[in-house]
Length: 184
DNA sequence: GCTGCGATTGTCT
DNA sequence: GACAATCGCAGCG
Image 1 (tube, helix red, strand yellow):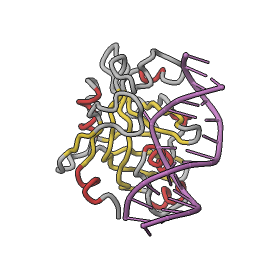
Image 2 (cartoon, rainbow, N blue to C red):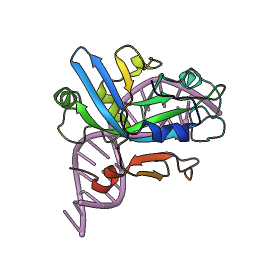
Image 3 (cartoon, rainbow, N blue to C red):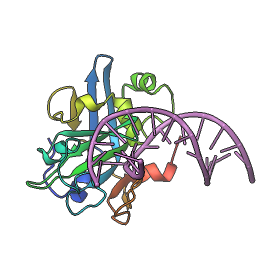
Image 4 (spheres, protein in one colour):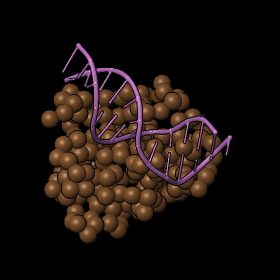
């Protein structure tokens, strides 16, 4: 397992190129992570953990190497990897990836054949991750984080998306090829 | 191709 | 009661 203990904005770019794999009844699905965002704790107003521990965000305070799954806008699931250093709640939101296995299964889950994993809600749905998996460990069980080789592409650092606070924090990390092509 | 807006529900104040 | 780390579709150029 990768070393996930450290400041989220330092760990986040290390996750680019890693693979997130799920093995459920339908079969195995796997994506290469190409887009992430870092969310810290008390020093990050945009973080769910900023206002302290609640029932929803409790897993952000738990040990690193676990999932933090929350519902967004009442209908989507978003997947984070907990990377907190001791005593600090923080996590890395998985925003996007490229399908590396189980394309057919993912198409069925998504109900489409394009735009499969280019957003946090989509990626979670593609992998079949739901609130049931909140707090799941990533080094064993049906969901695994697999260390991959570096993508060998520049990593772009940009402000985070979809938030209304701390919008200036440059804590979004994207593998360059993603933005260069944008699609197709 | 790009922009704008409605959908839908758990969680927190 | 208000808001939210989003998505997909309709509409226009």
